[in-house]
Amino acid sequence: MQENNNIDRINELVSSFFEKGLSEEERTELKKLLETPDNKRYFREVYTIELVARNMKPDNYLESAYDRVMGTIKEQSHNQPVQKKRYLMMWKNVAAIALLILSCWAAYEWGSHNDSLVVDGITMVNAPLGSKSVLSLPDGSVVTLNSGSSITYTKSFGNEERKIELHGEAFLEVQKDKKPFIVSAKGTEITVLGTSFNVKAYDDEDIVETTLVRGSVKVKPDAGRDIPEVYLKPNETVLICKKNKEDIQVEFRKDVNTLLYTSWKDPKWIIQKETMESIVKKLERKYKVQISIEDELLKHYKFTGILMDETIQQTLDLMRDTAPIDYAWEQGIIKIRVDKKRSKDFEKIMND
Image 1 (cartoon, rainbow, N blue to C red):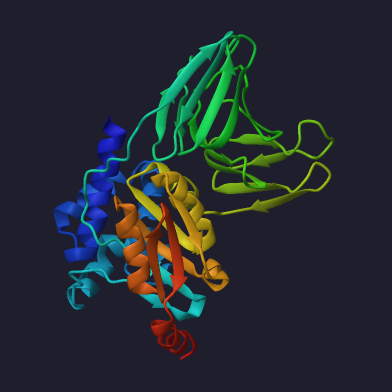
Image 2 (image 1 turned 90 degrees about the vertical axis):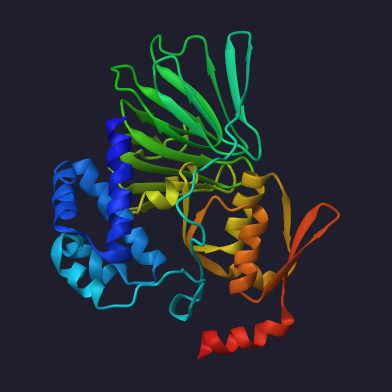
C-alpha cells in the first residue's frame, strides 16, 4: 500500500512540476521519495512520458531529469506560457500522429472479469474480450491477463515446479521460491525464480514477446529444439518470431522503456511510434469490437502518445481529428477509411 502511495505522489509531483513548478517543500519531499532505486527509476519513466505527451524532446532532458526537476527547470517553466489544454499534433520528423491525453486524471475502470474452470485437476482462467483479469496463483504470484488471454495450470503446480501455459498476454509478478516458475507460450519457455515481467503470445500472431521489468529470466525460444537460450536483464526484451516450426528468428532489444510493453494493464496506455494496424488489433481485444482498415496506406500511419480511460468512440474521434481518416459503423463493423478531402492538406504538412 505504501509503495502505491509513493507512486501516486510521484505522479502528482511530476504533473505539478510541468503545470506550475515545484515549491521548496515539494522538492524536498520528492528528493526524499527518490532515495530508493525503484522510486527513482519510476520517476525517470513518468518524467519521460510527460515530456513525450507535451511534445518536448526526451533526449535533451532525460540525462539530468532529477537535477532539472529539483531546480533549474522550475525557473525556466515560469518564463514559459503554461498550456492549459493538450492538443493532438502531427510530428513530421517521424511521420507520426500523436494521440495525447484530453481527459484529466480520472478514476480508471476497465471491466475486470474472468471465467475460471477446474476440470480433472486442470485450472483454466480466461479474460474475455473487452476485459482484463487479475488473479493470484497458489504460490502467491499475481497474474494480470489482458483481453482475450488465458492461462492453465495443473493441481501439481508448486510441487516440484511452478508451471503455467499462456495464450495471449500477461504481466506476472512472481513470488521468490527455490522452485522455478515456468511460463509456456506457443512452444517458448520463460523460466524465473522471482521477478516481474510481461509475456505477449497471442495465437493469431507469429511473435512471442518477453519484457523484463525486475529480476532475471531465461527464455528458451523452442522447448523442442536445440536453440540457444536467452538471458534477460531488467529493461530488456526478446522477440521470438515463429512463422513456422522450421523458421524461428530471435530479436534482442536492450534499454527498452518497459512501460511501452506493460502499460496496457495501467490507467495510462502508452503508445510510441506504433502503426495503426498494430493499434487496431489491440483496440479489437480491449473493446470487443471488429475493425476493418479499408485503405492499405492507413495501416502504416504511426501514433505516439497516451490514452486514458477513453471509449472506443473517443479513441477513434481522436484519430480522426488528427489524421486524414474517417470511420463509420457498418453492420456491426467499424470501417476506417482515408478522408480524401483532408488527405491533400495532410500530405503538404508532412512534406513541408
